[in-house]
Length: 283
Image (cartoon, rainbow, N blue to C red):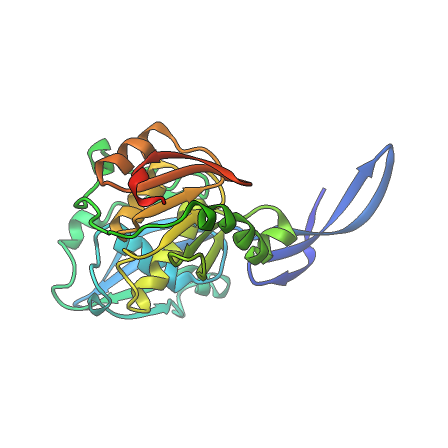
């Protein structure tokens, strides 16, 4: 019952016509809805273009998303590996798709064999890694986190409110995930939102990579939903010592966090939370 074409568009949000039914009566109005569009990530190296992945995402911070995805996948290891990031504005591509394709130009020798990376898999907004061919690729590729950072429980319990106050798009639509970066005393450093929780995490990692902020070994990451294996995996690649979520972690997320000596906190609500791994970092 929606009419998207009659709506008004903003970054990451589409205002569409709907009909609200309440107590048997109907009322036409506009409703703000999260935008979801495909983003094709391509690598350019030595004059050759390689298709890496297609992810369903909320438009915005696309360059961070591409950089963060490539970093968490082990394709790039430092900002110096990336020469440039740009949208693909080619004459042979439909104009409406120009900003749904990102080219990441890599320095010579700055990436593994690209033939191995051309997976041609799609990344849904709900599950980031469905489509990977082999389960062995789920194994964490990082060393244990060595950070000596500690944080007080009072700081942790104050984070959800600070996140909530900054989730502007979520407040409007009710349909976005968020990943936020905090310092040890609870100051917000960055927040990224997306229809996919894994995309929000990649955007946050891409922010750190492109601003020479990685590793995040002195920071806390809070995610608005649950902690999945993929959230822990991406955080581990970025050396995040403390990962918190307002909902539950999965068993695989807990196992992965323990393997890399990450502090994993779940059900962070009000004045209580559960510690599933690395409790020695919490004072």
